[in-house]
Image (cartoon, rainbow, N blue to C red; front, side, top):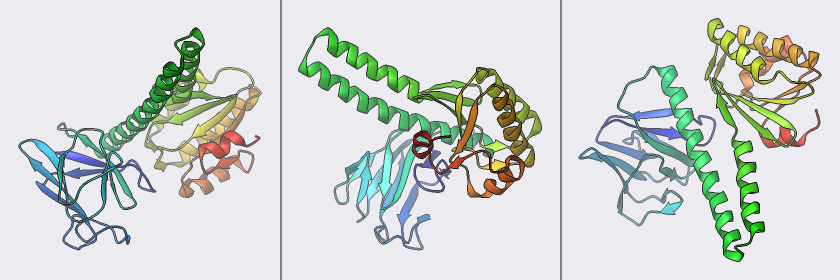
Length: 273
């Protein structure tokens, strides 16, 4: 049975790790298929076991968390799609897929799975807030407060439009590019059209989120530069966040220093630009 561990945290976030063997061990020992030398990772920390077309996680002496719940020593638990596994500093989401994909499509699928898992976690947190409000009072005010919470969450999660996820946070329009590769000129033309179709308004503050982008060509950099110039004609401003270090010099060459680049989204949303 083929399944994937999707890296949920760190510099390799979104990377799908295919597992096609019946016993896959995680730990610091050289015999493990996935190794980490971090001091909180045991020699044989845990194992993923495929049996009867099901997947189980078995504790092997480490402190393994499944959906933030610690496993008892030597326990074996079944795993389901979307379950989160934490081994020391490593965090993964488990997903299943039988149909083979190209490497590019596989990486984009993994990022979508990770995004959906994180969105579900936010929804659960809001559901708890709604239940707390309803527990205190059944008045119309509580219902309105719950609706307002859900409206704000919907705006922050945004909507998927083609290759973009577009959301609204305060007075900032956040545009996240879902493509992993900004390389092929034909694909870039589609993305450029979608950006202009969705940002065709006056006086916007646009934050372009590069969280998913792992490769970018000079043509991709030029697309961003042309977008910046087009937005200025509409009296709009552009900022960029979560840009990989290897792309900074490429973009600065075509953009100069006129477009601010921030390491993360919260910093960008709080800044003035």
